[in-house]
Image: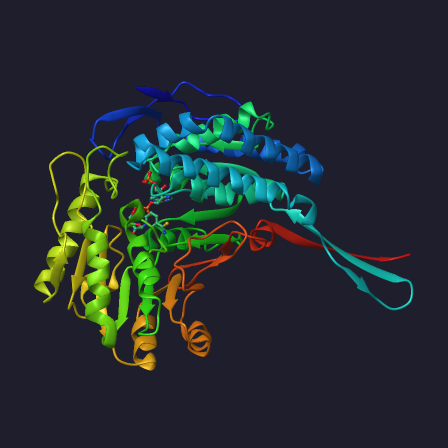
Length: 470
Ligand code: TAP
């Protein structure tokens, strides 16, 4: 079994308590990880605060070089880190290798932006002169989920470091090892001690300790709405920036004039990572005129997907835990009870691991639990619609607003829909995944703040105004 210690201020202290990480494909133990308690988190924040005094003075070009070296180390260790990622998430090795590459891309992207963290000059009358600087915040706390841990951790850690902040990262206990590997890669790439600390541990202890530590100057959280709201409440008496990314129930709308082949390919993207993705297009709205023909195309694609206990052979990977598998099955059962028809899938395929068949449900009401709540599994629900106005209203009838897809060859319609859909991102004729260069804003209950792109540079800095008379 692989063994992991905490990473605090350049040290890897012997753990006082450990936990076993299991492989979702088999539920066999794969790694033993240190569990941080409150004092470990306090030590990590102290180490990060002390490292901040030096790190904030490192010039932008050198900070960029450090980030590039981290990216290079991730790439050098791609197979090794991807193997840990596969063991903890159940995703294929090829998929995990792509995650390592994406993580490296985040570090490279922000490495290239360190010299773009600039202020303004503001003309004033007479001999007065004003300029602004963007300064780092200090210690930033990053609470990371299990569904794509390395990528989701890197997308906030890279810009935080690029802006001159230090980091305490708390990965999810279900999948902490790839973030612990990131901490090791950063140390081996020469990042100064204490700049990136990793405290694997339970949300109820290590997570709470990070959130309640007054020396943490910013918090980035990705995960459930319940925990996100709890964090916001907990820090409500401290004026610190928060970045909350809490999930979605994204509509994917196919009009009769769409390229049906491309739209069907876009619809089944939901099944990558077994549907455990916040931006997945879970609600498929199809124009009544093409509904039957289009759904046949989607079903044909789903029915070619394999479900196999070998993560490198399966098209639909295992769900993260046995309880996640039970929850998904309960959602499908509730859809049946609500009058839905399971057109394909809808079962646990075999006993080994936490797999679930890729599932398409039809005829379920818009207000059924499976239509409204985040299932976080390989379950697509399909709905007929008659008119543009009707589908926009139904697509917007959700508490979430993270992502949406629209498929049409009518440019006017595409523009109308993108204006009226209440979502941070609307994709047209391609249900494209987020990439570092573009923002990832959240509307409604999907979150607040913005990760990705240059928006992150504003989030992880604050403005200092300097007004002088020369
Ligand atoms: P959460 O409980 O929200 O866990 C996310 C992260 O928060 C983990 O690192 C977790 O640590 C930590 N955490 C939990 N309680 C905390 C607390 N009181 N203070 C600080 N940190 C805390 O998510 P989950 O239970 O893994 O998943 C539940 C549902 O959340 C999913 O079904 C899905 O709907 C949603 N989810 C959304 C996303 C995205 S990308 N938006 C990602 C994952 C899950 P531990 O895991 O170690 O307890």
